[in-house]
Image 1: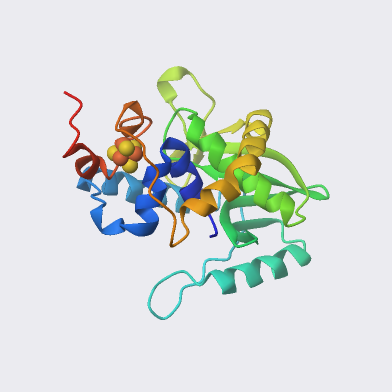
Image 2: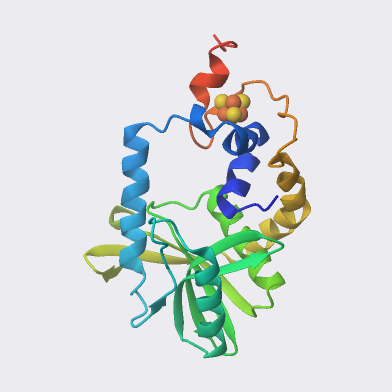
Length: 230
Ligand code: SF4
């Protein structure tokens, strides 16, 4: 089964989480404060799209409001062929494994990749996210140069901020780190795909540290009701 970058990052935290996402998503409970944080992240990302000036976004919705991935893939292909300088939410698929890139910016004959996160610090899961994108884009034949995180700028830390659209951003080059995660993604992507298969057996993973790190799992209540840690 195809794996998205969200699937991959979640599976790296816990493979059982991915299985539950695929087979029993109704057990998931997203706390309102987490949903609010996700919504704020989307808003922060939307504002960042114009950070390099004029851009073209591929996001396309179906009549029912869901993303039209096929249309986005087609539009991305057309924009790349035209050498569009800045593409936002460019969509890519390799054996069905799918990702959308927040910002692709022309860098000579190649494209530089930018992932926007509404936080001030670099986290491992952001590098995994970029590693996933790098692998899929490379397999799709996209010539990539560097990879960057676009983060919220922390003024108190004396950082150089970019003021844009009412926000303060900083751009961090994480090319080397994201390349090393690209190799990890390559080694696990099809393993994770098997966990999503209809007849896959649920991974036998006991509750533990991974239930809280890096994020409190949305299946926490389900998994802990029979096996409390205390
Ligand atoms: S609560 Fe823990 S064991 Fe259960 S799916 Fe989440 S991370 Fe995995």
